[in-house]
Amino acid sequence: MAGLVVILCVAGSYFARFEFERRVVREAGLARASIARPSPKRVFTSLKIPRGLPLAAILGRLSISPSTTQRIVIAAQPVFDFRMLQAGKELQIARTAYGKFAELRYDIDPQHFLLIARSGNQFHAEVKAVPAKIVMDAVSGKVQGSLFDAVTQAGESPELALRIADIFSWDMDFYTDPRAGDTFRVVVQKKELPDGQFLAYGEILAAEYVNDGHAYRAVLFHDPQGFPAYYTPNGKSLKKVFLHSPLKFAARITSHFSYHRFHPILKIYRPHLGTDYGAPMGTPVQAIGDGRVIYAGWKGEDGRLIKLQHANGYETYYMHLSRILVRVGQRVAQGQTIGLVGMTGLATGPHLDFRIERHGRFLNFERPPLPPSRPVAKSQMPAFEAVCDKEMALLPQPGVSLASAAAPPLDASGTSAAPAQR
Image (tube, rainbow, N blue to C red; front, side):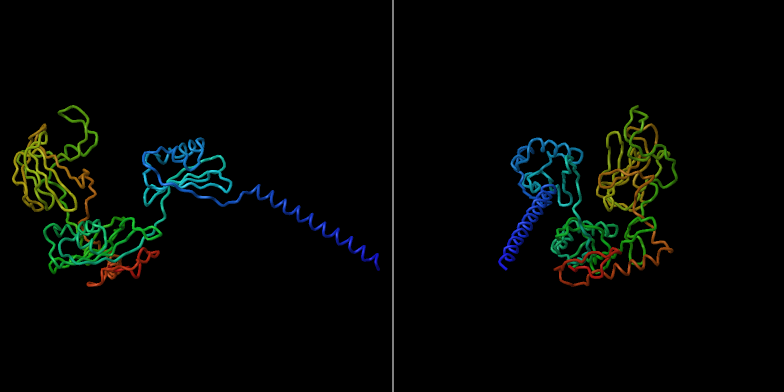
């Protein structure tokens, strides 16, 4: 019996030793595997960019070696200039669990950030867009002083006031026409960051402005070619047509719009940002649209010049006139005779040099991106009416609170059944 006990004890000790050695071998293998496959966790550190400090010194404060700094700069050169770093913003560095540089991030603006990532010995840099969402908001307000003040009091940016004025400016002058008690209602898309930070306004889908008891309404509709324009609920274009010619009678074009035209008198190449119409001396010149005279007189090589200001940022120029029939400050109607063709200034013969500009950019009047003037085509009326009913129904009810709830995101069709109301 005693011998059996001894045998069992010896066997037990061997088994315990075998299990211990097997566990040691297994743990050693796991240790080697963890060394071969480093932990994916990264350690992030950040630093507010000091004023006047070069990048090498900034990264040095984050314990980045000069050689790594050089590779970061080289990688970024095609997409970002580090001289554009702004003091006060944060520069973020990520390292592996073993302290090796892995990633650099810098927020360029609310919508874009610079990302430099390391993969082995390669460094890759790109400017990426911050993921944003489109939400829809319904905004309303009452005018006591100006539309700008009313929009601001509704918690919105003055840019929205400009957008509203732009829609209705073919029917109203927002400098003189608004009255105390006027109201506005709009449904507008907004671009926001995931945390709800506002980035920019998108399209205004529907709008209403009630001026002195008269309601102006607008609905955004895209024609079959995808061109967006605003129409009244009955399908009429809100934007007035420009006449197709500044001359009352047909005239041939003698020189076209060009950024590189040979000047017949100066014998040099230079831009010609207008259209020349050859016509007999004294041919009537007409305003292509309603507007106000902001210049009427002699203008160097342009000769006698009339400049008109129109709605929506358009301005038109009528040059080389023999006679001017309007004065500065005068309002003119579409089709009104404002001058006579001549050859004053730098001109080889009687003609009209006509130019059209919008927000500081000259347009080719022979192929102008001018606002449409035609109503919705009959074939498009069913589609328009569906859009109109849908978008007008989203306008906030008059008199609702100006406080707004969080706006729900757009659905797949680009609309929401319950926009926030302001």
